[in-house]
Length: 515
Image 1 (cartoon, one colour):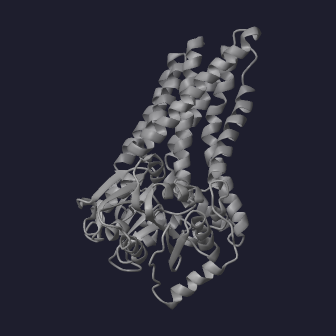
Image 2 (cartoon, rainbow, N blue to C red; image 1 turned 180 degrees about the vertical axis):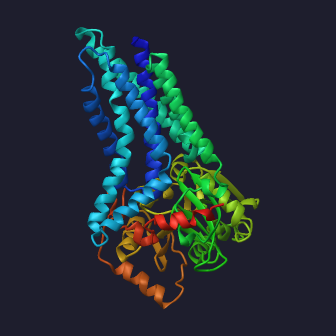
Image 3 (tube, helix red, strand yellow; image 1 turned 135 degrees about the horizontal axis):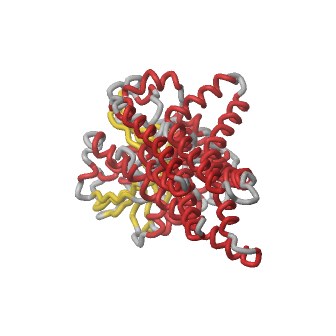
């Protein structure tokens, strides 16, 4: 095998490995919260796949190296088959296997949790296993002599890593966000097919492989004739969705808008994966946050709202007579699309008001990079276990918010979480940066207000006053920081959002409701 071909193969196998890995991670986060534990599972399974693959396949090479092409071709073909049959059909296999594991050990939650983690670990391990062995094989093949062994190995590793870098950026910035999970796999599959075609030296073997691909294309052709409702399934159906009006994958999970049939019938709810973000009939806490912050704005005020959601917080802020401009930073473009299409009537068309200026941007990055100073900053984001929103709950970011507030500016912060300790940790974290901190609380929904000046933040009644008093009197002194994630230690996302165990039976019977 020519040495230049070795370097090309190292680059392209490295590229596809990271595309598959990032795809798998996005699938994982459809079914599991994006916590540090999920990230640990992801990294360990990927590295284990690379390690065991290197050990296993490098030992399959004969001393005379006559079967190198055969081994490399087998790895690529096995990967193609796995991706085509299983990885591509994640929305069927993942919930089905998770349900099976739950049914086998229904009375042992700890064992269930272990088996679910083990399954996810193995699910992510397999793509890496069929790719990782390529590097030592190609490095050994490229090795010219012992004297130049270090330089040769370094060169192969360089091209393999460059491919991995390109694959990671390609998957994260283009394939998954713009093409979507449903189609992101076709690009690396095409590359894997090209690698196999090059490795199969004889034309009879190449023709056989082309027949293999033709069979796959025929299967896709038959599959494409399924009804539209059967093909566009992004999540197993959950009754809380109601009648689904909208459902699209996004870079941050599947966004669903449903018309409710169980509670608040006829109202509309917005979900990210299975987490309900807002409801058109029940948005007291968001509206209250925006209204009370708006009541403390000076004339010609300039405010920032991080996190659009349905738009209820932003709408309440724009009702303030003294507001001149509201900047909105929303990280998820599909959330923006859903809000524009389904919630504009309920939010008085907040996104089209002259005072409103929307930016599709990461709020954490935006507040770090902007030179603006605001009269108020209102943060209404998902929750503390989500990777891209969790930093905003820390004292480190409360300090950044304060630096971008004008003198006597107001920070309003919405948070969802159970338990007195959750509220006290956030209170302590805000208090570490602001002399005046106030709390409103309705069920598990909290609204915090912080400033360098005293604010008028009334209670809705004796029950709320009692709930806030319990938080303030709790002896806990811990602060949530980037270094010490105190909130994550006490946060149960499944309990807060009542997350479902995906039922495969419900999925099969109900997925035709997707539109």
